[in-house]
Image (cartoon, rainbow, N blue to C red; front, side, top):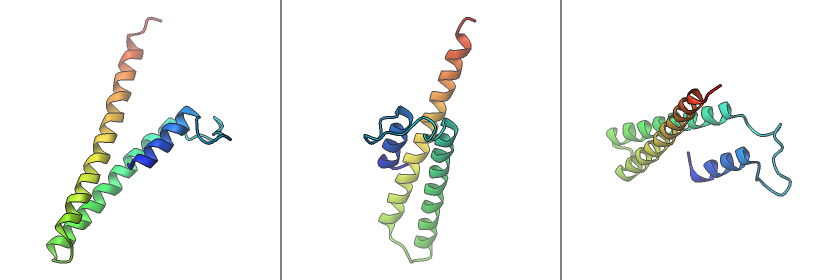
Length: 98
């Protein structure tokens, strides 16, 4: 996930977009945001694999492979951070007295 997409997702969740703002009914749901993070990680990983295949075939650049792998790694770390926060929030809710 690139920084611009992350900032837009954060703004959508916070409702602090442009002066017109994003109304709560127009804002994407949490599950949509999680799906976008997972889809981004998958896309980045596939792009890195494609770059590696091109280098093996002698058609690509090693720098492109390193860049693609770095981007895929960042996307995966973002997805794992979101997952960890969700688990932590769930555990905190389960500890609350009813």
